[in-house]
Image 1 (cartoon, one colour):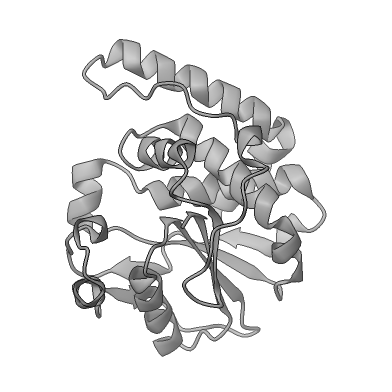
Image 2 (image 1 turned 45 degrees about the vertical axis):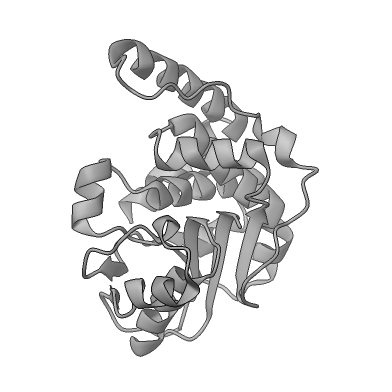
Length: 234
C-alpha cells in the first residue's frame, strides 16, 4: 500500500520530532501565504503531554489517550480538526504511538490501521480528513519507535466508507441523538480476509463512542472480529 510505504520512508529518514519541527514551519508558511487562515497559536510540544493521565474509555475495546478536558489537549485537537495543522497531525501521531505503544505490542498481528471516514460532503467542506492525517503520522511514529515490529502494521484508509452525511456529533448533546445520527452510516468495502487482521480504528476524539460503535458494527457485518480503537483524546 502506497501510504504505508511513504510512512515507512518518512519514519526511517528522519526522527518524528524532526518532522514535527518541519510541520510547524509549514504551518507558519501557510499562515503567511493564506492570511485568512485561522491562526493556530503555539501548540504544546508532544513531550509536554507525557505526564497527563490516560483518558477514561467508553468501552473496553476503545483506548483514548489524552483527557479532552485539558486546555492544551483541546487546543491540539482543534488545530488538527479545524485548523488543518500539519504540526498537530504529526504531534498527535507521535503522542498516540508513544503513549499506546505497550498496548499496541500486545495486539494480535497483522494490524490494519483504519481512520474513521468523513462523508464526501464533509470532506469537501473541510478539505481533508483529520483522522487520516493522524493515522498516517501515527504509522510514521511507529517506524521511528520500532522498525522491526512496525512492518506488521498497514494503513488502510479506504476500508471504511461513510455512506451518508450526518450532523457533527459535537453539536449533539443528547446521547440518544448521537446514536441515531450515525446509525447505519458506515460500510466496509471488503470482506475480512484470511488470516484475519486486527482492525485498529483511529479518530481524533471519543466522547460517547457512538461513531466508533457504528464503525465497529459495519466491520463486524463484513466478517471482521478483532477490532480495537485508539483516539487522541477522550
